Image (cartoon, rainbow, N blue to C red):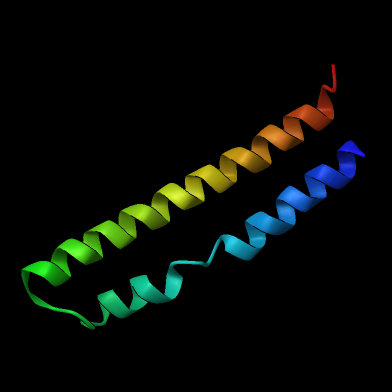
Length: 70
């Protein structure tokens, strides 16, 4: 059961890793310019970094729990 949970977390991480990728690329290509665009671009990039850090942490924690189920 624990192994299935870890695999599910890994799959969800893989599915959501790219969730903000398109938005980030569009902002880098100048989809929205000006001060509001710059603020949005900074926020979407920060959100992408945070999401990826949380996904990495979830996978790491799941792997650690699998190694030490006590």
